Length: 205
Ligand code: GRF
Image 1 (cartoon, rainbow, N blue to C red):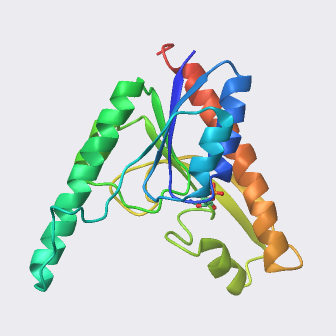
Image 2 (image 1 turned 180 degrees about the vertical axis):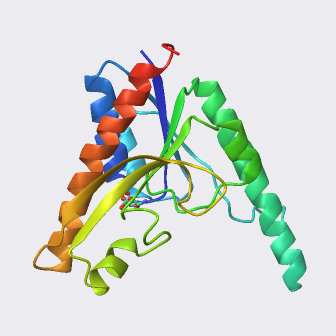
Image 3 (image 1 turned 60 degrees about the vertical axis):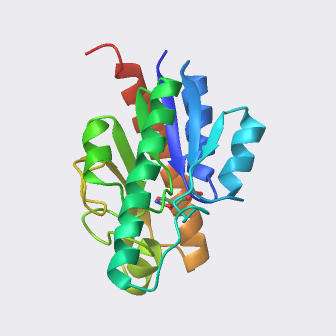
């Protein structure tokens, strides 16, 4: 049995699919890390009985940001480092073997990526390297792509740039909404399949 942790910012449908697949395969979902209060992913965690932790990147009471842009930027960088340190501590305390990003809307810094290298994966709703970043489905749709798709990849320091683990194609549907729905279904299938494979491999190598 291996231990899966997930980082999510929003809806959490991939998080839920991963929890169900991991459990079905005899693995444990040990933690959800969320950076946004009120995210539906937190409610899903409570319903599924997965422990969760909210890690805020926002300025706290003790960290006022002055009007100077450079200072504000430096302050953001410090807040990110502090948040990533809290996330690593939470993951270590939970004993996570594998960390899956599932709609986690932040770039992770070099220190965090190095700490979890080879055990940090992401899903992206495009056939990478096409359409990295946000609004990937809409961009592919607007470009008239006849075939869209989803990609599971290891995370490096770039935006959706790490080594690819698997891709699945999704045919363009009659509407953007129908295409989005098909994409999310493909995400849930592919991410669950790849993650269970990785969890099965923990301890074997
Ligand atoms: C998914 O499309 C995922 O590929 C992208 O963010 C979205 C998250 O959806 N990174 P959900 O929160 O898992 O429903």
